[in-house]
Amino acid sequence: MSEHARVGPVSRAAAALLAGGRASLASGAVLAVVLIVAIPLLVPNNYRLYAFVNGAVQLIAVLGLNVLVGHAGLISLGTAAFAMVGAYTVALTHAHWDWPFAAGSALAVVVCAVVGLVTGMPALKLGPFAVAAISLAYLSVATSLLLLWSGLTGGGDGLPVRASDLDLNLLWTLLAGLAAVLYVLARNVIRSPLGRAMRVARLSRPLAESLGVAPARVRLTAFVLASALAGLSGSFYPMINGRTTPEPFSIALSVLVLLMVILGGEGRISGPLLGVVAMVLIPIGLSTVFAEGGQASTLTYGVILLLTVLLVPRGLAGLIRGLLERLARPVTRQASPEPAATLELEVRSEPVGLRVSGLAKSIGGVRALVDASLDAAPGTVHGLIGPNGSGKTTFLNCVSGALRPDTGTVELGGTPLTGAAFRRVRAGLSRTFQAPQLMVDETALENVVHGADVHRRASHLAYVFRLPSARAEARARRVEARAWLDTVGVGHLADERAGGLPAGAQRLVEIARVLATEPRIVLLDEPAAGLSGPETDELAAVVRRVRAAGVTVVIVEHDVDLIMALCDRVTVLDRGSVIAEGTPAEVRRDPAVVAAYLGGEPAVPGAGS
Image (cartoon, rainbow, N blue to C red; front, side, top):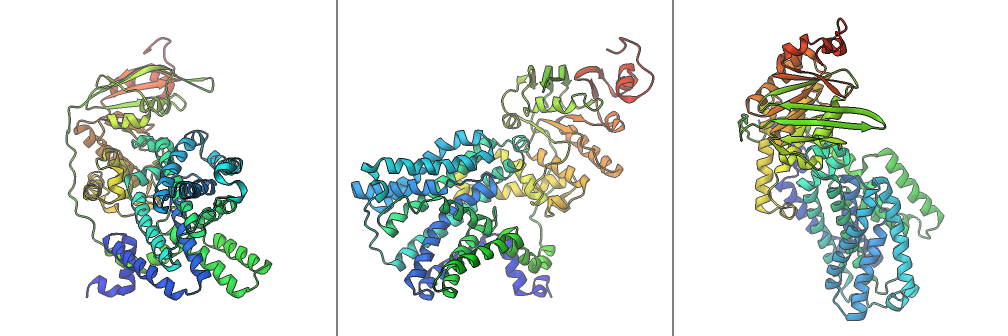
């Protein structure tokens, strides 16, 4: 009997859902159609059906905010402001120019996207925490403008818009269907290179830039997307309710939408849907128990939400996923990996060298680097050593673009490297960090895919709509990522969660991710830190293979034996200045190096300098 037969249908269904492939998408589409058709039959009460209609509209805004909060790491309290702009865009075009609701909604999306772009740029420059306060101020400004321009907007009395003539059942079908389509598109965004770029930017700006991601750009994209969807959500208010006033678009709406994101499970694909369903069903249930409403229902509502947040910190989606993983565990252990052959390192272009001249950098009044230079020959391993505080990591940060030096130049193959770190990655210079920076909740394979994304060819829209070019590229990137893991010797760990891997394996996964960027120069910052003897030997073997492929490696390391055995030439820093440079044997005998770093008799004044 096969493994699939032994675990039973429940586990197989759970595994399919967790896989998130075409089968689960098709199953979800069928389920969505069934629910959309069935809900009007199951909920004949117009009041309750109206609640479901509002829930479908709110889901549109929640989808955008989930991308912003759960993936880009930004909290916005301005959802109500953009929803109000969207509502009044439709109300104005309908009341003054008799536009159809559909045309008004399309214009609302464009208007809110532009407003989000214009307002998001200055807000994001102040940092992620400032976005919440500034976006809340947008609501106050938008409300004040609507009240002041009473001749155009009707002021506090609002605009007399005639609601849609569509039957409530048909209105539900149309809006729920649109929400379902947008749910799929939001899912595609999350799983695309853009979604991965948002998550890595949320984790660490230096890491994002080291993978060719422009953090400010992807965060602004997330803010614009959330603004546009909030505007689309608000644009349906005149269609449903008729007269449009500022009153429904208060801070309470922003908090409600944010609560739906948190309750459902921020960052999770199914989180928005679960959060909205919960927030629609709980009031309906409470109105049934407490027919007269009042303080009792309000208290119960608050207690339910508080207990959910306290007992299910990962949200409802996290709770359900945990249960499904337990059911699917026997299947996932036996799952076959995607086919991949070991990707042998090959010289893809002529090896290039790295020349750094006259770097100087002061940090907080301390001169971290003083006229530091390094010349790494093409296709060699060049060591950079020195005592703690000598400026080694600062040197790497200046070379990689993470820090801007006060003076000095960096050349890759004779071509000057300037600009931000993400631009240098695209030019062929990649790096690792002292402590491996991995997406700990993602698999080793998914971490390496982040590196391969720098070579994306298909457009973001192609990924959003899952066009053939994007699907083919996504499959190729996963096969390539698995091959890079095989190349560094950890292919068997491809489907393991990165946060659960031992230190040596994490380091090799990080190197595989760097290789996936197809670099010409690699900067390794203390790669052997925390590794055992066998792990260090394995690391050295990988570095030698990288050198043999024509990639130039600059390695900062405190393991002197590793440096002496691995490097072709070594540069020694002390107090931000170069005190020696040469072959490993020459550096080991240099009196200045012995005195400053290796230990021994004090150097004769002036010797070796």
